[in-house]
Image (cartoon, rainbow, N blue to C red; front, side, top):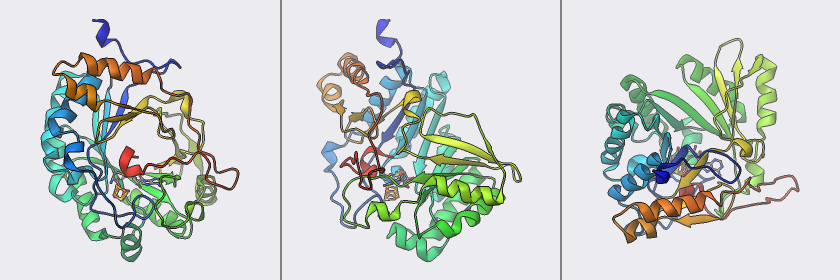
Length: 336
Ligand code: SAM
Ligand code: SF4
């Protein structure tokens, strides 16, 4: 009985949200996320679909109510629909309140219907620009029409789509209102993400691309009346409503500390490493206890021990005009 007590960390935060990266691979090479020539993990390092099921089911038993599947690109993992369908049983039992994913949208045209059938109701689609040429530049391998078709298919299947756009200086600054208006006409929420100092990509200097959401927000306020929404997700997102259109716009500022106190989430990589905080290096290997026994007890113990080490907050800092608190792993590793 005691085993099924919920996961509470040392700062009295209940851990109810698990983000799971199911692959480190991707069919895009976004410049802020990956280098052009990536070396991916050998297959045997990855959790199998069955292991992912066991891992997630254990977390659900320990009180996780929301699962977000990410990557890499989750929809390029072979057989991933088997995993989604397996999670449906936790939705059916009521233990899991939400099953969702973050995707680049490239495979949505193919999978939207199946995702809906598995119980997914909302998807986050990452899209930074509506300009075909700029889209190809920023994603290197991505093609905008394919993603737009994916979004059409998702909406047609009944999925609620939220657009996530990374705010990039001198890149999509001029598309702020284009993106906002496009989302309004399609009835999609829109969230902007501040670019994070992740990994050493040998690409553009991260600081050069940094467009502060404070500035972005100020520009929105020149045209619209912004109403702050009280809505809190336990994550780094804050929301406003545009009074004139009724639209919801989110801001994800992972570089500020103002959300750590309500942090309810942990992240599992595709190799079974559990990161207790996006901005810290500390992690727990859950694959070893998972593979060591068919019994879930050692895994549960490892999860509880890891949650005991969840830090109070992270350590990103741009303020000294250098990238402080930089962590060396890529977003595609921890899954954003
Ligand atoms: N491939 C999927 C996608 O692009 O949505 C899921 C994984 S991706 C790593 C998750 C999110 O992280 C995307 O919205 C992406 O834009 C964002 N991201 C990647 N690198 C980032 C960075 N350096 N700073 C901020 N956001 C980043
Ligand atoms: Fe792939 Fe998503 Fe990273 Fe872009 S942001 S390279 S789509 S994992």
